[in-house]
Amino acid sequence: MAAVAEQAKNLRTPIVCVMGHVDHGKTSLLDKIRGTAVVDKEAGAITQHIGATEVPLSTIQTLCKGIMGGNVVVPGLLFIDTPGHHAFTTLRSRGGALADLAVVVVDINEGFQPQTIEAINILKQFKTPFLVAANKIDRIQGWTPTKNMPFIKSFANQPEFVKNVIETRTYELVGKLSDLGFSSDRYDRIRDFTRNVGIIPLSAKTGEGVPDLLMMLIGLAQKFLEDGLKLHVTGPGLGTVLELKEERGLGYTIDTIFYDGEVRTGDTIVIGGKNKPIVTKVRALLKPKPNREIRIEEKFDRVNKLTAAAGVKILAPNLEEAMAGSPVRVTKEANLESAINEIEAEMERARIECDELGIMVKADTLGSLEAIVNELRAADIKIGMAEVGDISKKDIINAETINDPLYRVVLGFNVNMLPDAKDYLSNTDIKVFNKDVIYHLIDSYKEWERVQRELAEKKKFEEIIRPGKIKYLPNCTFRQSKPAVIGVQVMGGFIKPGNTLIKPDGSKIGVVKQIQERNENISIATQGKEVAVSIDGPTAGRQINEGEVYYVDIPEGHSKVLEFQLKDTIKQDELETLFEFLAIKRRDNPFWGK
Ligand code: GDP
Image (cartoon, rainbow, N blue to C red; front, side, top):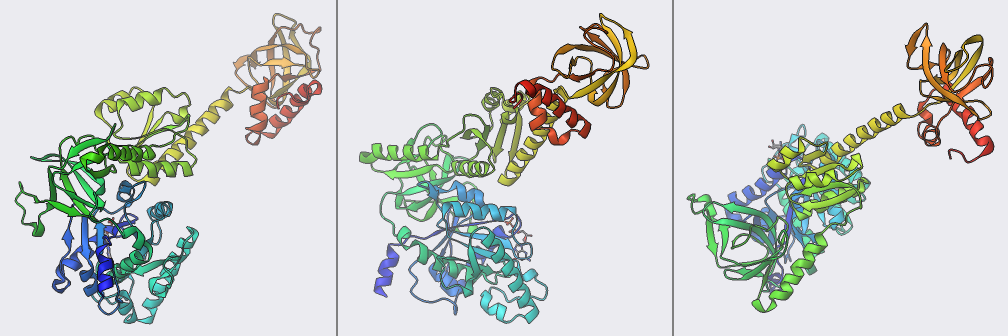
């Protein structure tokens, strides 16, 4: 026992982030965890941090009475209060994820949804162990609830048909996880948690299964994280900014999660800033007042010292340039130089490699910027610039310098558009997409891009000179020259004024000036039509003679587009005419138009 206690002293509290699709119950689950722990007197207290909630091991042990084994060395769990993968990606530590573990909440009745998949892909990328909370089991028809009971006990009390529904739905989740490359099973059937993802059916409403989830998180932390959690609880603090906030009467503050070491009032800290590292001194460390006995002007308690893992509000001068996701380091004056260098290196690592040509991306935090860039890359979308911050007039001006219309775009993720940018934008053709769900953003851009490509294609098609073949009809010479006016039949494709005509031997005969049908000018004559055409250049009876066939001369560039891009979209008679025309051109030069 002494050894275990000794071990526990060196382990910090693992940090847990809750993710999943909207409305699947992330907030309810966090509330339930807080509520269960608060209400249960015997269970002891939870500790409210800034931006996080700590559930001590003793609480979890009480809740899990009868289902939890001994020898636990992890001191508890620190839940990040803001659910969603946005918080997960924002909170970084040394290039990795700050959260040690994650819970992916999925409504068991709805199954996987786009954000469920997005969350799991992010966790995969960060190699973060996770559990799946299959929520809302109480909604399954016939479920008999028992408040806060462990799932395995409550499940045993259910009728057979309810058990069957749970089994079927669980296996549907197993199938989806397998599609994403994870082997999984209901948690109580898993032996090796390093190879399998545990699924815990639960209800954030009745609390059933919540003890199982907490127990599994502790187990997972012990399995995966013992090394990672052995931290220098007494060393200089390391943390990540959760949010930059202006507090009334206090000025700028940073809500920070410390994942290592300790921090004291008066400490020198270095923070990653917008342009360069910020060096400042902690003026106060603020924690929420317990029991909500809050008078407005005194929302916080001041503490002198804090040990990781913990969430705290730091009051210090010069915080304006700090960003959500910025690293924070406590340092001694003597080590200041190296602390600055390390922060600089960390910020540099977070900088994003861009393509020579591509769209502009703005996001609210370093982590979210990286997440969206990863998703854009996966969707093969080129990125010209990627930055943290609101959409400014400068961004719109930058986009205007790009020639490719498909890249004259600014994508904003969870950011605002500044008023001057909005004004300026209205006089440009720059397209701005600004949303707070990554997949909505990417889908909208892709849809827009598709439509733009189609429009461009259509325009290309309209401008292109198309194949045409005509026959000079017998007894239809209406005027000999300047211009020659003759009667023709369109044999294939069509002709338009402006078309140059050639003979089957390749020689040019002149340019179509006008086309008339029953004495009316027309702009196009299609296959089968008999029309009168005036042709600048030849003299009837000399260069051109009744009974001959002529082709529209197509420039080589247009011919390539027709043959290689539009072939499938043009009609048969036009296509045949094209091939006859190509045969003429390729008689002397087999590579013409290739
Ligand atoms: P979030 O968007 O993922 O944070 O989802 P919420 O926690 O806001 O939950 C969405 C809705 O589902 C709310 O109306 C909740 O009351 C409801 N809800 C969440 N969990 C459960 C559950 O376990 N059972 C039932 N019946 N409803 C739930």
